[in-house]
Amino acid sequence: MLLKTSDLAFTHPGQKTIQFENIQLESGESLLILGKSGSGKTTLLNLLAGLAKPDKGEILMEGLELSKLTGQKLDLFRGQNIGIVFQKPHLLAPLSVIENLKMANFFSKKRNNKLSQILEDLGLAQKKNASVLTLSEGEAQRVSIARALANEPKLILADEPTSSLDDENTLKVIKLLQDQAKKIGAGLIIVTHDQRVKNHISKFIEVKAS
Image (cartoon, rainbow, N blue to C red; front, top):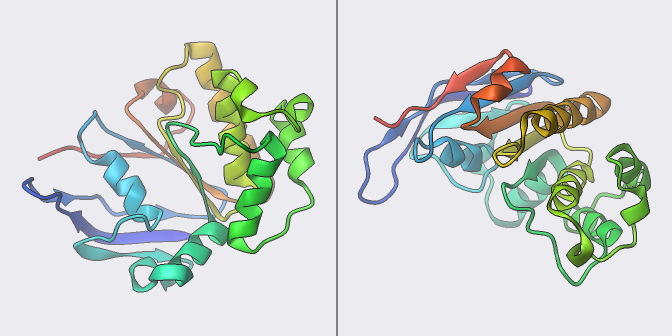
C-alpha cells in the first residue's frame, strides 16, 4: 500500500473541524478528491503532502507515519517521495526551465539524468533553456508538472490542474498526468472542484464542509 489515511481531522482557527474520508492508494493508481471551494480539499492535499499536520488521525506512506517526521527530515522525505503540482506554478523567475527542475533535484539530494526527457515528454524540449518569464500560462503549468516529476516521486499531488481549461485541454492535462505517473509507477491524486475530471478517473472521494 503506497498511501493510507485513517480518521484524519483538521481544524482551522475559528472554524468547524473537518473530518476526512479514509484513503487507500496503491502505486500506479489514480484518485480524485472532489469538493467545492472552501470544502477543505486543499487542506487535505496539504496534509497528504506533509505541509500541514492533522489534529487527529494518521497518514501512512509505505508504512511510515508522515506526521512523525519534522524539520529537515520531513522536507527531505517530501522532496524525494512526493511531487506537488500547485494551482499556480510558483516557478523561480531568475532560473531557466531546466534550472527549475535541477533545483528540485538539489533540494531533495537526488540526481536525475532524465530531466531533458521529461521536458521532451511534456512538449517542452524547445523551452529547456528559456527563461520561465517567457512561458505561456499552459507552458508554465507543464513546467510545474515537469518539476513535480523531477525526482521521480512515488506520489504525485495535483491541485486544481484543470480549473481554467476548456474540455480539450482538460483531457490533455489529465492524460499527461496519468501517463507520466504510469511511466514512473507513481500514485496520482488530483484535487479539484472540476466534475469533468470524473469522466477520466473513476476512483474518487468527496470532501464536504460540515
